[in-house]
Image 1 (cartoon, rainbow over the protein chains, first blue to last red):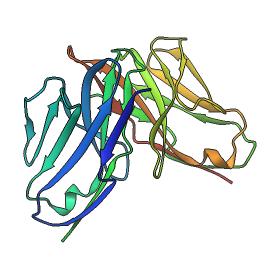
Image 2 (image 1 turned 90 degrees about the vertical axis):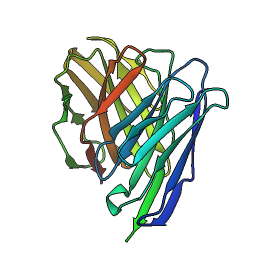
Image 3 (image 1 turned 180 degrees about the vertical axis):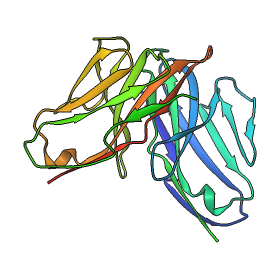
Image 4 (image 1 turned 30 degrees about the vertical axis):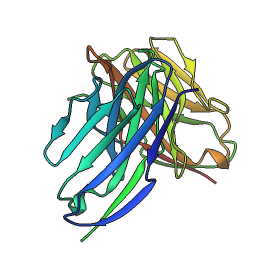
Length: 112
Length: 114
């Protein structure tokens, strides 16, 4: 059974801090790893990673994948209160419509 | 931009009622999904569809059925709603990017069964 484990489950930091969110996975036929940010409504897409060692960056957010050790991290630097959200990691395997397995998410709270 | 629209955002239904949740996507995606999301349990797949009139069970299909009569529309049906189906329901559709699938979500439908 495919498995995606995110840690920590929740995290409270102060504005300006840097945070690292973790996602480890066990899947039978890895295709891609995706990160989403979810506030009060639907998750919004952040990154898709398919290759090891290549950092994806968008503003203060960045992510990298290690296919040998089967994990990914999502970094957020200089956090702002607007970064407060649940961050979801999902792994695509098999390439078909049934290929996405989600972790339970990391609930990040940024205190002013 | 991809748009996935869920017509009902907030519903309150009585136990035993039949509930329809409608989802429409405008990007000609082959694949569509229904998930439910509960605190501490994350996103769980109920059903998905990879083509018109095709459907596959996800992780938690019991108590649900789906209908995909047109490519753009995927409906989730609760034949007889129960209180343990109180949840947020997310519809999604996916596209192939050449190196993997990216999934796009609707806004969510908050269902309360009383």
